[in-house]
Image 1 (cartoon, rainbow, N blue to C red):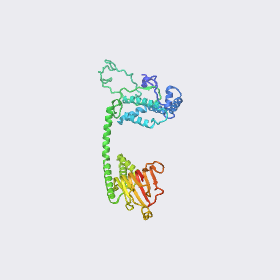
Image 2 (image 1 turned 90 degrees about the vertical axis):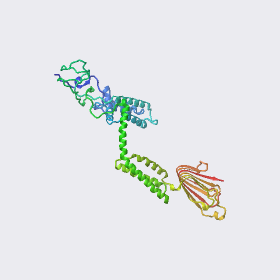
Image 3 (image 1 turned 180 degrees about the horizontal axis):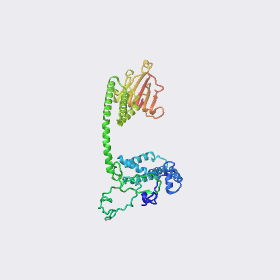
Image 4 (image 1 turned 45 degrees about the horizontal axis):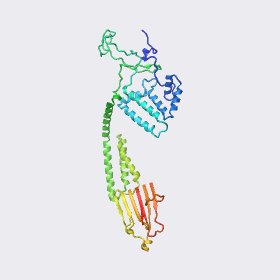
Length: 451
């Protein structure tokens, strides 16, 4: 009886004369890709390293080539590449591989190959297209082939119809092969691949099916893959909603009660509008923290938190209140005694002093200065003054603009964040001085002087 050795192609189960492409075991600087290419083409590996480095300056083509080679070329002791193993794991976890490909392509495009990226991107786009075709081809194969062990396998030719077996029994068409005793012979068990340094190629197994969890259909059956993924996602989503429902209901009730309490206080004592914002942020923040502690993370709370935080960034410093009212309102005083402070939450407010009667007597010329405060959270504040009135306007706007008449010159117009503008009276004007302070959080302040 002849003893089979590893050097015998029939005993090793490999195709003679074909050397597999593998990463290098000893000649490696990063992952052995360049060393493996050098051993396969029988050239110095430095050539490939220099090629990768030079091409990296052209839109990152070298990095893409190296990454593709790392995915497609297996390690010396492995039968499958990293890409094949990743696809198999995705299918076992019932994750559609095509979905991962699309997501990765979008992320790569945004992070690397946007229009602002330096260097030519056309070669990189060609490599992306080639890599996509390779992935689609591998996904369409289904399960990666399982290599045979040390047992020998025939060349793959099936026995012709009518040919006798060793025991003389002739198997029927489609029946299992018969053993020497006439019993049905079970399929031969496959042996895991062993680490070897031989340069011949593995022969795929033809009889031993893979053992493991069921796989989702390959890419060729996209509809079934999508349906299976959506079904599992729907069930998981429903379970997450059920677990998070107590947190959502509790936070909503707590927020409604807190704002109702603030509104009651506002009706009696005039609470500034930022009190609503800070109360809402406190309740929502406590609910989010509770969901983290109870491992029922409710990320939906982040949306109202972001909205309230944006409002707090703009209106966090206003002294206006919701009870001040909103809409279009105007004041037209005719005497100094009718001047006073005015507040409004939002809308358009106008202070018209064209009918104000001051400066007609000596007592009014020597009277004490008068200060008027206009406070508003959002909208437009307009101040109309006669040219001969000794009135100074001091305006502060958190976010917006201040304009004197129709001029956009320096000293008559400012815009932006936290802007301040002081518009004094004319130099030759006399009479009782009046100072108008405008405090607007967000909007436009318009000052008009008419003759």
